[in-house]
Amino acid sequence: MKNKHKCHLPPYIVDPIISLQAAQQKIGWNITAFNLPDTWKQTRGEGVKVAILDSGCDLDHPDLKRNLLKGKNFVNPSQPPKDMCGHGTHVAGTIAAENNKIGMVGVAPKCKIIPVKVLDANGNGSMGNVAKAIRWAAISGADIISLSLGSPSKLQQVRKAIQYAAKRGIPTFCAAGNAGKTKEVFYPAAYPETIAVGSIDENFKRSSFSNTGENLDFMAPGGKIFSTYPPDWYSILSGTSMACPFVVGVAALLLSFTRKNNVSISLKTVADYRKIFRQNTIPISNKKYAGNKFFQGFGVIDPRKFVEWCKNNSN
Image (spheres, rainbow, N blue to C red):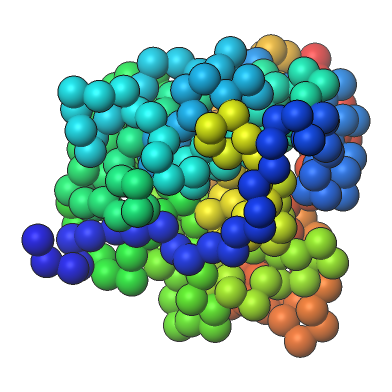
């Protein structure tokens, strides 16, 4: 298979894994910096289903198993979507780890995850399988699709699948990539039908590895993110792969809130989310790049602002 038809996990930084026994419950900086417990008074992602197209998931992880729905394995269809890499489990935890007094807690701790395995134990996979998986997710009940993977090369097959999902009212969120100061973000994040997410660190500065480009939409916490990891453990990873699920989690919170409160605001397209997100951002801390869309998109997603938005839009 030609390289342009392959996808891979963007390189990410891995700190030593942490056992369940040593973890207790740790609240990551991505949660505390935005005071997400205050947002949880309004919504915790109830009733929202997120399809994560990645390396699968640790299906028995104590922080995840009650939030997992039936998924699919596109690498080996005869097997369950079990994660042999760790990446997909980490993404899932950032979105939806339970608030259960152990390990860690996700951005939307009551939303549900549909684990879809498109990457193998080495983090490699076929873009053809990614396209098939997007279409499968679109007809299998997903409300949102999360893609923390990419390639510097275009593949029309994947874009058509994303457009197919969009026509069904299912938006796709993508990691921008970890190649640093690029001319454009990776694909499929570069497609206008997706929301492309870059990474910031604990100081709200643009991560040096985070891809840049005109199609970059938003920045989110992606540096040193504490989350779930197989088998039943935890790890600290860095990458735009970690930033994308943060934004997906915020999207799940918003969608859940609008449904529970019968808010008359549509959340079916990337344009819908982009419009609301743009009203609730702050600039990155880098003075050199702040306000420059090429480097920061429309800014850093700030869930603290959504609390007031939710109150103003409650019936």
